[in-house]
Structure formats: C-alpha cells, structure tokens
Image 1 (cartoon, rainbow, N blue to C red):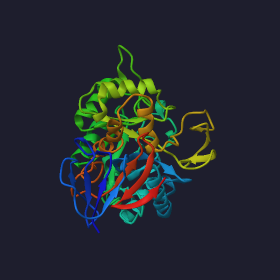
Image 2: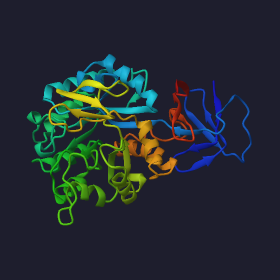
Image 3: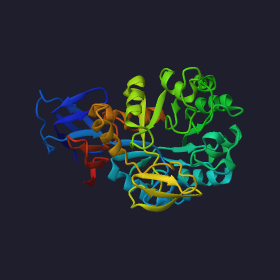
Image 4: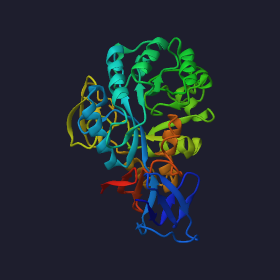
Length: 385
C-alpha cells in the first residue's frame, strides 16, 4: 500500500527541502516529492514531525561485522552482516575482501555471485577487492605474501565466477602492468581504486588518466605529501574529478586533516567509508582480520603484532554524525558523502545513493543531532533505534 512521508527536512539528490511530502509507491519505490507549498496529498501519511529523511547510506568498503569476515566465505554470515548493517543506516554495501591467493578470492566471488539478491538486509551491490596487487611498504593489515603484479587473466576469471559482481578493485599504481590493468577494468565499466602504495604522483596520475577514479582510505596506506614529492596523497588532493575514500572515526585521520581534504576536494568528491572489520557492532576483545589477530580496545582495532590499525569498528551513521559534530560539514553534505558519493565512486549510483522517483525506497529517519532514528528498506521499516 502506498503512503506519504511528512518530515521537517528531506535530503533529495540535488536539493534539501523543508517540509513537504515524499511518496512511497505500492511497489516499494520512491514516488514524487510534493513541496510544502503544494497541495497536501490524500492517502496515508506517516508524520515524522521535526525529524529528517535521508537516502539509505552506502558502505562501499567494509570487511566484516558481528564477528563475521567477508573472507570467511559464508553466505549465512554475509546475510547476517546485511541485516546488522540496517542498524547503522546502511541499505547498500560492497562486501570487501582482503589480499589472498587466487583460489580463496575466487571462492568468495562464486559464493556472492551465486547468492547476491537473496540477502534480507542491506543490499549487496557488488564486491570490492582490496588487493592483492599492493606494495609491501604500505601493507597495513594486508598479508604481503600474496602481493603480486596485476593480472588481467585473474581478473577475468574472478569476474566470471562473480557473475559480473566484482564491482571495484584497489591496487598500487607502481606495480608492473597497473596502467593496462586499469584500462581493462575501466573499459569493463568497473571502478578502480588506488591504495596501499608507495607510488609517485606521476604513477598515480597515469592510473587515474587510464580510468581509475578513487583513492582507497585516503592518507592511510599511501605515500604522503611533501612540497617536492606530492606522492599518493598529493594526487588524491590535486587531481580533478577524483573521489577520495575517507575514514572519519577520529583515529585513522585527525579531524582537522579530514576537514582539510574535504575543503580541498569539496564534499562531492569525498566517499565516507568504514573499513569496518569483524568486531563491528561487537564488544571489545580479541578478533581476526583475515589471517591476523587483532585487539579491539578504546574505539580502535589494531594488529596484535606491531599495533598497526587493522580496519575500524566505525558505523557509517556515526561517520556522518562525526563530520557534523567536528564542525566540518553541514548535515546535507555529510549525508551526501555517505550515500551519493560512495555510490558514484563505485559506479553503482544507478541503483542506490539518492532519493529519486522509481528508485527502491531505501531511506533513513534522522534526528536533528544526526543520530539514526529509523531505517527503511524497500519502503518497510526494518530498524528503530
């Protein structure tokens, strides 16, 4: 049954509207938005008073949650993660792998390729391969024994197993064959990210001009910026039309540095991500990230051996609250950076990330302090805080 939502504010794709009514149709899609000065619609109205309506968030870089890891290659666990993500305001996501051997990654592709669409929570819009074509100097919490040069043959095989669901890959631009690999993926209509890399500015630029379009968790795991060697960070800041992933948990990147990048790139080119690992939505303690033991304490996940940050336990709804609380951004900018921009940067913005007529009615009810009140999936309320 169709209905209308009335609320204090609506974050539409191109405008933020005060008041008015948003239609949810019989087939669980968004219908028309009627402005406050328009005629009040007839039919069922759900009144959210002084709360705000936002598109469902899109987490395009997430390794795990609820004690599960994408690398466990367990469909039931992936579905539990998709259900849990609704508690974080996420309605679409890209299950994200870690560096591994060909066969392990191929098995993950087969599992998701065979079952995608059966998930009962946040929608799987594709797979994100973080690796294995990385550089040891910036390995982070990735296992360097699997690092190697890009292989178009491996990619084609993975894509076949995934039934076309391998949507995005991150690689280091300095690896042999990186530019040719980027061209191949880009011509396949898929997204290429650059990260875990010691690349020079010029090497990064060559991959961007070949078709890469996003930097993987900017500042983390990449050659830094100096006044004579701009490096990967300089490329992420300078190159036009490039989107930058950013982890806004206050630990991976200082708020002032996050604000500087957002100001330089503008919010239209910042994709807020979580990089969340299996300890997401779980208590502190001992966990695994892929093959590595991790200790989760004081809001961070760190490798037991060496203390490197090992992903995060960030929830995407907290990321949008953080950037507003840090006095960096307006609420509408924060919402855009966690919905439209991640979708655009991963080339899935034709499916999710915006409130538009005909799109699945995946949306959030936010309180004025940016905290999550309710999550709707296909026009049905699925989580209430």
